[in-house]
Image 1 (cartoon, helix red, strand yellow):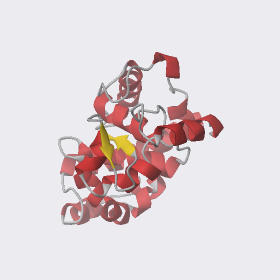
Image 2: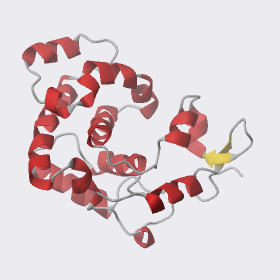
Image 3: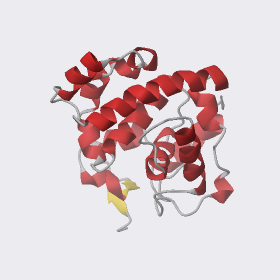
Length: 201
């Protein structure tokens, strides 16, 4: 069973879960479960942008600091951030101090408000791209997809930043637009059940 990580409860999980102790709870309770909350969707796509060039472990370890720094990722508040806020964030050792990514988050909050005005919610926008399960390949064998490329292209057209196809695909995996838990992972069936009962926006 080299494709799996055997957790302390002796049940198999996606192999990446064993790479860091904090991954287990994230994998078991968050990753892949469908999300329709706009704040959580916005937070995730921003954090995936911050991860660019880094590891998810780094971002996950700093997630609470990010939430504090970015007002809980309330995009209405983040959209009003100014140069004073940027200076505050660049001095915040609890987050990733990358000016381009910080400015992109503020920009994306503004673009999110525009998108909600047009689409009604971020959830409605993202979930309209949900791919058919029959169109998906073997779980965790790719880092992009036709759908992630389509979303990325559309978001960039709308002025979003740090939303490349790989970033968007990781967002899709995490927010449950696809069930990318490997076959045999003990959480895969739980995600499948959650997706089945999930009310699409």
